[in-house]
Length: 455
Image (cartoon, rainbow, N blue to C red):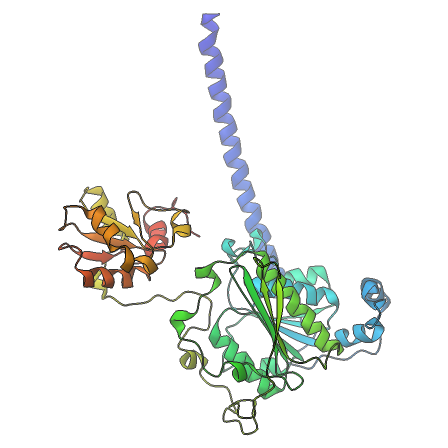
């Protein structure tokens, strides 16, 4: 019995090695198939024939085909909607600006509902971090244009809907002719500059604008420039300071929340196209997932006579530079800030050497605790930036008697760490150097530790 034991162990080890090799080969084949599928989707999206000039008006039809009647039957038998409502949709064109969390559900339901033409604007590409909320895309399409990916999904859902891809950054140089070509515009973006751009372009084109937003557990929905209601500038004549604006990338969002708001945007666009509730007073709908009353409605004032774009004597008669006007980027990407000269900062490679040399120091992580709990570097002290002034004693306690010890500050992207360094220097909390790590933990994952999580 004893003599057979080593043989049995050797046989098991050989089997384990063989299975591991087979697993690696299967994973390689899966990766190759995913790449092939993504390339196939990209080919279909870019090579799809366009039977019309994207900027031409939608050709009107006089009646529905039998396949369309079969497809939309449940809507056709709806009292108050019927064949008239479906024909209104069939002869309507809508533009969804943004194929992200809001645009995903909105575009799918508009395409499925039977609108004649759907334009989709987005310049970004599909990323794995999008997929928990941007359900129009999938894992196989990583790296593909979001506008193209969304178009593929809508075409697969409903080949009767003409889908036009606008794979570009919408700005004052190209927005007006694109918006002129559609009947209704849906703002599914995540930045202030584009909101003002779309508002002004829709006012100048006399097009209704269905605007939505979602952040964390909350969302809101408003229709602008419709039936005597206000435009966006009537309510918000000046943009908020850029430092007060939070997007999903920084503030987080529960995936289903933009899905709900996007569905509401699709619903309101359908109501506009079919003339449902056209006489209702202008309102803003607020959604809060954490509230016992999840939906609230606020009545809005009517159009302001002195509004600079939709008023009686407008001073804005053409599109302007909205990035300059708002002082913020026209994308939802978090821009890098530069509060501290580069030579006074520390690169990831520099911090790695400090760790390898076992140089005594304090690493201060100024992210919120909810982010710190996701991942952190060893021996780091977590004090969120917003609490730093009130918790200086915590930092001093960590330093102890080593008042000459250097402090290195880290955050997610290297932005919050810079004001933290300024605060620490003002407090003269140590006689040692105080620097932040350039690029933060995202750069650390890119350059130093590829196994470190990115979120």
